[in-house]
Image (cartoon, rainbow, N blue to C red; front, side):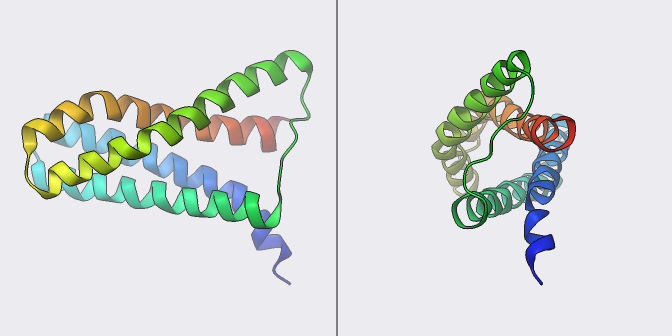
Length: 142
């Protein structure tokens, strides 16, 4: 009864990553335009989207599916694994920096928030975009 929706979790995960990408880009544009409040709401949305992704991803791979095997040709497998490995390492590594960003924003420590965001935003964008790329390679192309 619940099999189909649970098998669709990878598509949901890719959608959440894509949503995070759009929200991060929008938040960056808004802050450049001086729309502080809209930036805050947009970045909160990106945080929620990324958190939902992580929860859904962990549930799918730890409870439902387990390990997924890439079925593409060896040269594409090398490319896929390179993207996947950097995606995973950077995703894990950026968590403390995102927490730091939120902490500084909540305390209105804008200089510290801005300094941390300069290197956290590009990494967060990379992780969000490569999450979609991994999904496309794993579930759509191969």
